[in-house]
Length: 501
Image (cartoon, rainbow, N blue to C red; front, top):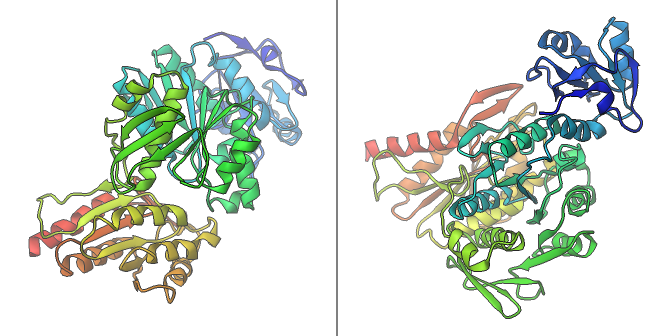
């Protein structure tokens, strides 16, 4: 790591208001819980408090300098802080540059793939990582479920880490010989400057549907956040699925070269996905070139995810025949169309699936994939998160009712909202708009138990799909995160049914 001083890190619009420019900085952090001795501490303004108010924790952790705004400087001076204080009008906007400089993250940075979109980011990322590993690459993964550096795995806190952590990660990957890093890039990360100073070799756009409007306000703003990935500041080229109108628009408006992909018969694209949607075989055609793939995961949407992963690898320079062989490797994607088996297998028990689907489009796609392979009842357990985009709740219910025979509406992460109000909004989309039977069950554990009972008692061939939380191992209620894993609860319910016959 290159040794830096405060003077090295000053840029346009930054000024030292107190302290010594020669102070040495060995790291940078905006979280006092992870701050290390020798770090520059970024004290950022927040919605409820200013970071500068936590200066005592930063000092105790060993901060040697502070990056903040004018308000932060005033608060720190009022407390008699003697550290060097660097004032910037909007400190978050310069953190990427500062972190990149401190960690020298560009020196040995791996080939970068960035994936954005409402649904499918995680699955596509795992498809790419498994294919790259099959090709003999040493990989890194940064996403919703976990961060990987080669064989090391670390549970993720958020989809895309803060820029200070990101540049430290990329520097570590470079030091450990990682060849390629696949990242999920969220709209929040793009808006909040978390991926500043990272230029992706290939950026992927999967789709856009209603989500996160509590943060972005409108679909237009949500789209603009995603579209900012496809600019020269953030990527070198793009792979864009044009199955929806947002992808079509992005393909026209992107300011980097774009390769388009579609599964629609009425759309023109560089690569066209063909073959029977009910089958895993995928025919990917570009002009006179055909690549035959096989989707290792169920569902038409996973055929698109597989094609997107393949095209991104081809665009990065991997020969098409090698890509076709590499994507045959079935990735392990926790909580994405994950089959939950009972402790003792039994043909009398329903097929049980856990999936992260938590938007109307994702719910519909997951259940559409399960419907053809379900000979009996299709029973879905569904809730919606509190304090998040309430407008999508009826749409989630309607999407479930369009495919399922029984919809058991329950709680997801209620957070600070009344769970009964959330359940009612989801249920409003189910009834009376469809033939699906509706049950409302307070408490997610009880709802899963009820769904398994309904499916089991209906006879062979039934499927239970528990949607919304996927890999998550907690449930947030009134500021408390309670232990909860849909997979564990679902397996226990199946075991109880097996024991009672």
